[in-house]
Amino acid sequence: MTWMQQFLQQVTPFLLANGVLVGWSTPTLLVRATPTVSNSRNWAIVQVEYNPPPNGAPGSNNSSSQPNGTRPGCPETARLLSLSPASNWGETIDSNPTFLLFASVAPAAINFSLQDEQTSEKIYQASVPVASESGMFKFRLPDDVMELEVDRSYRWIFQVSCNSSASPQNEGLAVNGVIIRRSNPDLKTQIESASPREKVELYAQNGLWFDTLNELLKLRCADPENPDFAKDWASLLEHPIVLLNELVEEPINRVCMD
Image (cartoon, rainbow, N blue to C red; front, side):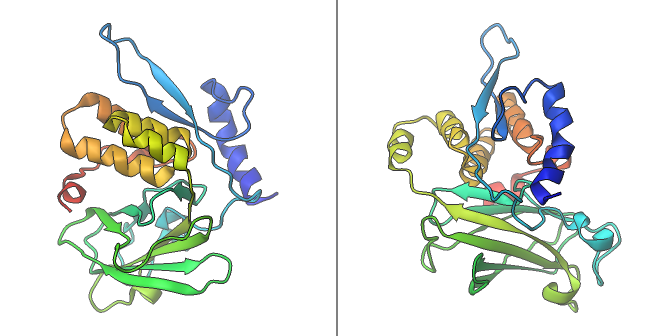
């Protein structure tokens, strides 16, 4: 059984139970629509055009899925999660995308690296600014360093050490996945005249995970008390192809200040 078959075997009962898997061919992303004046529960079902390999992309968005869920030098309960699909495949139209991750312990160091998915050639690496507390962290691929090439698949890797004497590469927690940049001139034209909320919907409709996530983050940062944006955030993280329910209530203050 391939990786993708195993993954679908796990999520299919959930999709059938919720009426999503009807005439289904690709995963469906649920983004809650803005409630009407009558405050009825309306949902916009937006098709995500993910086209991963038949066996899925190897990797992990959750450090606990690795052997034993821990690494030397880290507490037994330490966890590292990237805000990315559990399929380990995400797309973008941004030449310099932003990544989000969550560390359950205050990291001593966070390393980011990017390599060619086909050749494993290391293309870029950098240190991510850390904080004295656990929580959300954000990293944007710098404009003045490089740009993702269109239709080239890259593997991103975050490695975290839990204390200053440990090596992130050998003794820390790690998450990784695949990102690919797409070209979509028509979408870019639509985005230029779209409202911030419409941008989220357009990115989601076009299966652009990183753009959807970060545009929605901007909305939440600009209006943190807006219940509709909070519901959108929950819908995105709780989707069966993402499986990050535990991060829905995590504070985002730090990544809003960056």
